[in-house]
Amino acid sequence: MANLRIGSRGSQLALWQAKHVAKFLREHGHSVEIEVIKTTGDKMTEVALAKVGTKGMFTKEIEEALAEGRVDLAVHSLKDVPTELAPDFDLVAILEREDPRDAFISVKFSEIEDLPRHARVGTSSLRRQCQLKALRPDLEITSLRGNVDTRLNKLATGEYDAIILAAAGVDRLKLENYVRGRIPPEVVCPAAGQGALAAEVRRDDRQTRELLGFLDHAVTRRRIECERAVLARLGGGCQVPIGAYAEKRGDLLHLIAMAGRPDGSEVLREHGSGNDPERLGRQVAEKLLDRGADRILNDVYGHEAAVPKQP
Image (cartoon, rainbow, N blue to C red; front, side, top):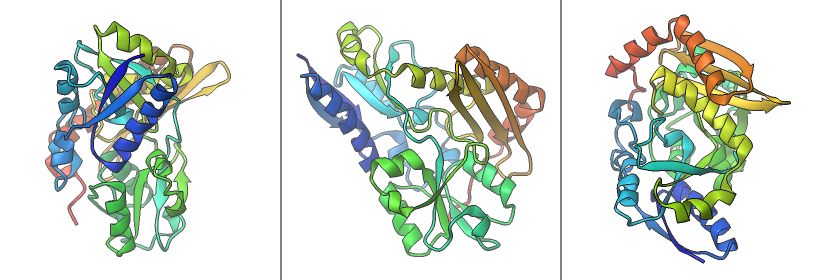
């Protein structure tokens, strides 16, 4: 049996994820240690994510520890992992996906439609902002950073009328009682990979690769490969207004994807079905490009002012 070292961010949610993987490994007889590593994204908590614009902002320092041999594997929330990994690394296991939807969380209001005009909604995601503004142009979207508890406290003290969080993160921390509703992907398309965890290893570490093989969930991997193919073709990272969600329907994958302007003035949506995950992802991305997604995204990349404003 092996002694495995997991690299993880230090947030409550990231540690839950690392401990979740550690539990499975211990059940297979391995001893496991968790090393907390502070990432660029963790250090810049006062800046809206879209303003940082750094690919791998939640993974870079962990990959450095992996390359140096200080840890044997890294556990990531897949939506934070860049679509292009460095050639030295591989996502050897993608765990079975949990709820991929976004959760609507509010003290006073039960759904988006119930929010009063000019209600303040907290999110650090341009993807969420874009789709929320398309639904309700009157809403005031303000940047919301920090761990889940910090965000919920800001809601409880009245800084926000509602906040939007990934449902899977809320579920993992057993905070479901704060959730007023889960937003259908057809209304607010999730981020590529949202709700899924990945284990990353050095590509040449054959032993660790073999030890982690049992964690890989084939259906989830196909869904994620499809979604990440959209992101790769559109040239986007995890902090741009792009969404992609694939699900298995019978023998086929069905994919919906979106790209839009942060102010919600233009939102493009496309869908498709197929057998080949990456091919399907590219095909749907091409439909978005044919309708002008490249023009929209070029404008977004060129204008820092498009991020949610600070409260």
